[in-house]
Image 1 (cartoon, rainbow, N blue to C red):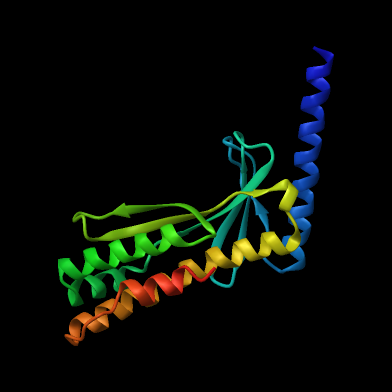
Image 2: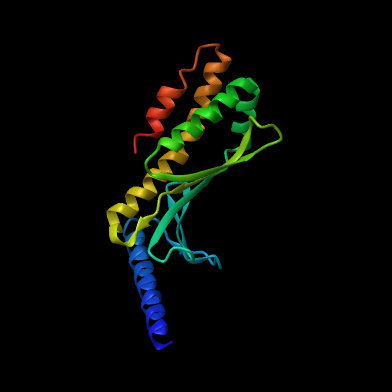
Length: 186
């Protein structure tokens, strides 16, 4: 019983030290870290990289790693423009190509779309990085992971516009190769 208590205290101490180190690094990079209360995590730190909000999280199931997650909710005017300028076929192709590219991206662990009233329309996307284990956790690995997720979130509205422009001008979108190459570059 005493041994178990000491191990738990050591784990909690390691997690707290890691959290403090992460907050220090994020402040050094001017990412404005703020802790978010979340009962499902040991810690959840919200950061901003430019206009993009991300979260650095250590969940309760994994005592030896963190991940970075970000969510994109495209502005309503972009969604409306995309819907009005594309056919359902082009929207499905865009979503399919986006999924293929995210699956092939080495930084991404998982992603989830929130779909609108039609299966070819998405309203939100959540992108989660692969875990960064304590063994590999450095300021560089943390910042690289966060900026990789930020770039993925930034490029999606640009790609939506690209598909919409190609569709409305009746030019062929060469979707898979350029999209995949762009998103898989990390």
